[in-house]
Amino acid sequence: MMKLTIVFLYTLLCVTISAMRIVPTIHLSNYSSELSTEYETFYRPEGFSSGHYYESIQIIIKTTGSYDFQCASNMDTYGFIYNGSFTRLTYEPRNFIARDNDRGGHNQFQFEVQLKAGGIYSLVVTTYNSGATGPFSIIASGPDDISFVRIDIPRAMESTTVTTTHHPSSSTTVSISNMIVSSNYMGELTLASNKYPQTELYYQAIKIEVNTTGTYDLSSRSYIDAYGCLYEGSFNPSFPFTNRLVCIDNYMGIHFNIRYILQAKTSYTLIFTTHSPNTIGSFMIVGTGPDKVDFISI
Ligand SMILES: [Ca+2]
Ligand SMILES: [Ca+2]
Image 1 (cartoon, rainbow, N blue to C red):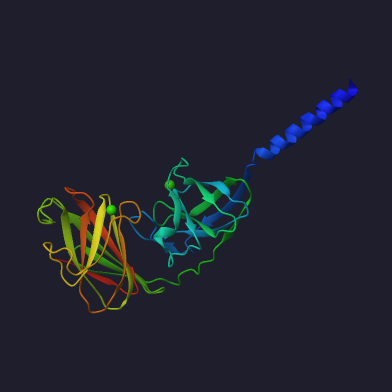
Image 2: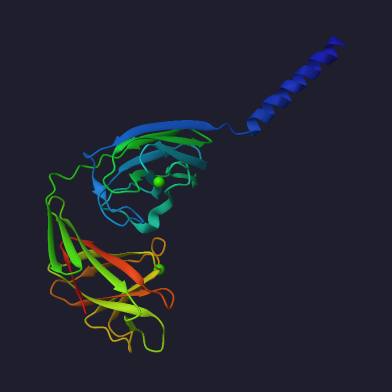
């Protein structure tokens, strides 16, 4: 009887141990930091202005699996997971793995992502509103511990901002310190706007010129589903394929981003139109590159 009890207890122990092996243990990892005015700012994804402080943190995973990231802060935080080392100057929209604003409740971002052991990923913490600073904590859970390593981004030196108005609805912000120049154009599609022939697609044509040859981004911001096309020289709505360089529908949500090498002293035409017919509304085009972008409404 005694022997039987021992065998039974031993069997029970083995079953318990094997069951424990099957159920993965959840590992919690924490990271705390603080966004301050010492940090670099950027134009965050889905944002409507520049000037968001951000912190880029490399996350190192030893075990492939599903990981959950939850932010805690008094700030209204916005976060994303990026494939590779993230910095403002090198970001590629196709490298976003996940991004969120408020899923975690109380204005906090939260997402669950599949990450591979040995992969290089960045967690980027920023805020919904520009100019916000304050402490935050990240709580990550998953099948293994995560190491967080802050990516050191040299802070932009004293940045001088020059705002010049050279069109009633456009302005240029020049950041001298890092030589990335951001120019804005405000526009609006109305019932009086031009339409493509035989369609109900409204569009606005904007002439674009730069003084310095280089790679520029022309990025839209709007609540309407935008569609953008870049032409070299002029645009004729009756011949929309003539002179056309590139058209982009979606790059992040409903916005387009056209990245193109613009030649100095060359005229381009940017067409802002919409994904669907009968759509009107205001919009903004942000041009970023090595020099200002001149937007001239035509
Ligand atoms: Ca938020
Ligand atoms: Ca779109």
